[in-house]
Length: 167
Image (cartoon, rainbow, N blue to C red):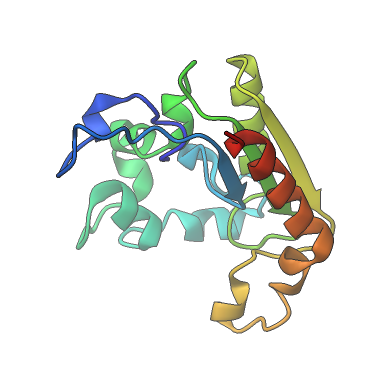
């Protein structure tokens, strides 16, 4: 969200408003981008679970303590979706997603990549074959993070940031 809202003054709040909050580069690892399609790659049962009233997605879209589903307020769902804010001010991206991600549909980074490229924002997408959601170790899958910390995956990130953040 921070990368796609670059230059959007409505998101500049708090102290130090005289300092730039512009993002120079974004590494998006398995991030959701278009929340109305967050479960696009999953079976019907899983799709319904992703939109259960009061679940974490619903709380992100509608606020803490909500009894609503994320789908109950289409305007809030759109406003909570990073893809909504892509503009010429959007920072360059690399998107990385595991082909076997069970928590965020792999198509989310493809959706973002396509939208960024349509707006002429530099974007490159990588799919890690067989990789699950990278922070799945916190949910009990102790091996899920291994593909995300390989020399190859880390090299992609370091090279991208080195190119984009060079002074």
